[in-house]
Image (tube, rainbow, N blue to C red; front, side, top):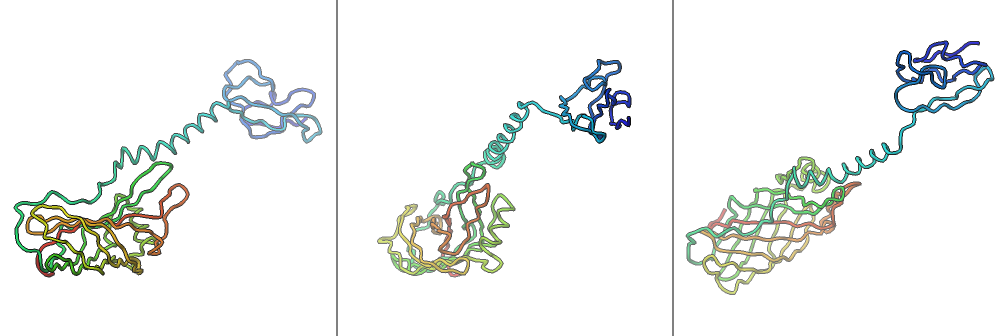
Length: 294
């Protein structure tokens, strides 16, 4: 008789009589209270998880427990699954709605500055500091809807007005300087999405004059349609969009939202396993035009 030692029972408790010997060498049965009641394997009964003994032949050809396996109640498995589900669903909701908060509001015309300087608007108008441009894209992360917004104040260009007609407009946006509320998103935007290391700017050029009909009154807001060419990521495509304008102080405020279909400019869709982004976005622009050539 050559009983096999385990880590928690004595040699005497391992020998079960009639040659029955546990096959498992290293399974711990648990901590034994001194003087506790005898268990089914001849030792004192363990405190801890339930243990199932399965019997089979030992090396000497006699039956013995083939392995000792801990079993856990099914309710703990259910609790674990519920916790994981709550984390996957509640985590993104808590982050977007509590930690990160709502996305910035859309760019729009501000209240007109006063006093508004009267007079003709013919001449060259320069894009001044305070102008903004950027993107707005809807995304879904772990089932939670969110709007990604990135912006820059590095906008340059000029607009020429002759009488009651806008005859030319050339606007350039520094894409490489656009920032959102997440550094990882900015890294993807500057990387494989827009490749700003190769195409650092986006440019718009008016291709059809805009007829104003009449000179807008002081603090009067007007809307019209603009048509031109938009170049991004090395690709130029025609675009038509609605813009709003008003006279404000000594200048003119202009606001526009240009719908963007990613594939037209060969922009890859950044969706992956847990995040989904649609195939469209919006290029937002707010210009503060001041009189004079750049």
